[in-house]
Length: 193
Image (cartoon, rainbow, N blue to C red):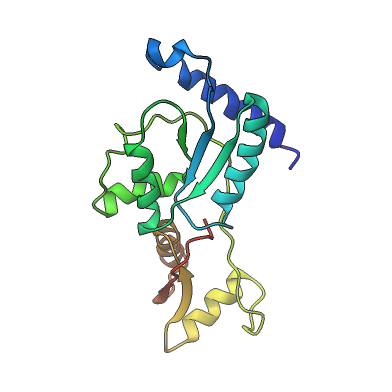
């Protein structure tokens, strides 16, 4: 939370810089002259949603206009991302997305937007890492113990996934650890992003 003022200033400066690229008619009125919407393409409660809500509060105060967060989950983040791509390019609809989803989705799936042409990046807002957790009943306390256990199993262990990035990170982990198959169990809600 102590990094929020710096995050807020960087994001606000980036929004104002992005507004400088708008045409004369858009800038004829002082920006912002109406509420701003940040679309989060994932379910409420995940990391991206929490960051968007923190940013929206500070940004709204700084700009003197309401900044709301709207969750449009589905299709690994592509539904909300497409909504922003189709919105008027006036600075009143922003996208809070993860780098992985923004770059991987158009490569892995048929996206109805051009990732490089449909968006103008304005700021890196946060860096969020991945953590590995296991059920307390599993007899492991370290990653090394987990790897050793996986290697002894005749049946694959499983992990929960809801995003392409989690799949990619897990595949990278499996390769580096030289472990046999770990089965993906996809989740419906993608609030973990």
